[in-house]
View 1 (cartoon, rainbow, N blue to C red):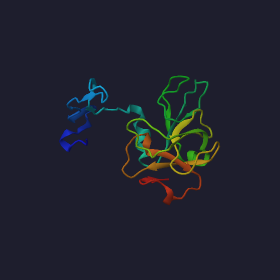
View 2 (cartoon, helix red, strand yellow):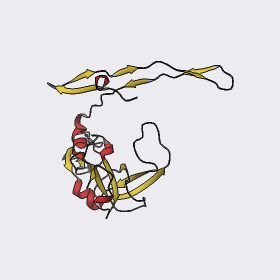
View 3 (cartoon, rainbow, N blue to C red):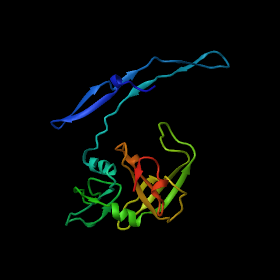
View 4 (spheres, rainbow, N blue to C red):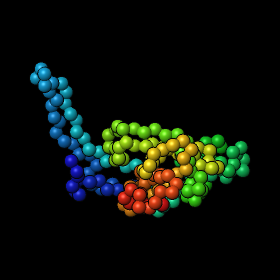
Length: 199
């Protein structure tokens, strides 16, 4: 059941601290579960509505950049690291090799020119709270000069191994989550993109 404006929880940051306002936990009455064959009580539902505060910290730049049509990666610039210059996507704050803070870099153009499908799986069922259209075409993407593989989903067409893909971004009404990033086959026209997405 959708929340009313009075029931929603809102959060702002003031003087470097989170300031929650509104309701973050709404309890509804339990409902009995009866066995239709025996008429006996089998259990009870426990409906709860909780709003979580998910802090992005150093990863905030990644999610905010998606809403602006940019794909950020990170690069190790530590001269003492054996793997200096390694680029990571998905975005990481610290280098897994030397544990130093990495540098955020705009990887958008490199992704548009080098993204290809490493592996994929198509699922016709999903879990709770799924917002993607079924079947979901999950893809693992590799990029030139990147030491990691990014998981995402293909919004248009069918996945194939080594198929060239390009990133698209939900810039209209963004969610500020990883759902604002998807991929389409190279050569897809703007008119084929899902609503709210752009190149």
